[in-house]
Length: 376
Image (tube, rainbow, N blue to C red; front, side, top):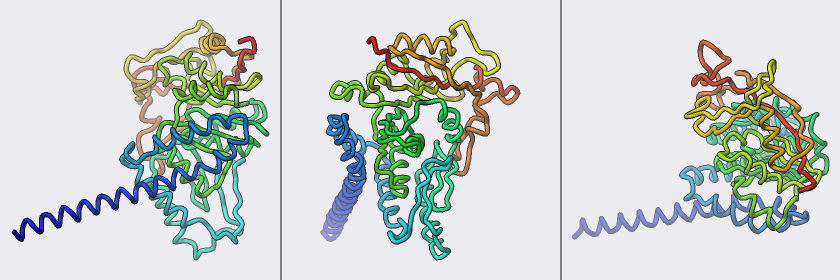
């Protein structure tokens, strides 16, 4: 009898503990969702206001802790970060127009704040791996896998000025380019990415940086047709960078993002191509990897620039222009303390860096600009 009583008591304790954990998870979840509200309120003052209900609902559904085993832990990081913000009396300066996006207190945090800085470092490390960056937060440099600032430097002078524009960044990762767009004067920026870790990284970054005109939401280009059905053409600039080759139907992706651009708006398309910087192709070839490309499973088609321009024309674009063609170097994409897995050096043939380990041409990336065809 005593054993039965003890078993029942243990079961009751376990049930109570489980309920407490679930309640804590839901509290953290609600707090995380609430972080998008300032941006959604700004959205409500624009022609994209009809998007707000759907964005709010989709984000709430996809950020439920049950959707990913690590979400509750990431939400806990956000709560702890909130307690580490510098005192309000100390001036904080954002650096959104610099290669290392971030924020610093002025004057810098004194040595007495060293414990807080270590805690900040530990919390940010719990969101590993960091793919895009760099970010500089109160003396901590997040040296991400990609030197995303190099890509920004290649496109910044070529694209239409972003001042006063609404910008959509499809497949945005943790929002690095969104922060840079704000630094270039954009009025409102929406980044979408289905990878929940990247959304959590953005929320952590923005907990420290505090950019209310930028949001990264857990959406994909699959969500765009329904959104554009209620408010089409709401963006003046649209970034699609590092996305196209992951799409089984690249023309479908190009059409979807076209419908989000206003007439005269600009698509900034960055993707893998077959051309070499020293020897562009003219015959419209396409590489369709049978298995992997540079160890990536989901690379479906890598075209020549000539073929890519044809795709853009078929998808309803005009004024198509190639503005950059660059080989990806092992200095631009590499393993770091903030991304400790394999990277580009491991994906190239050891005896020939012109080839991937599968024998395909090594990565070359092109940046093209295009406008929606006004005749469509």
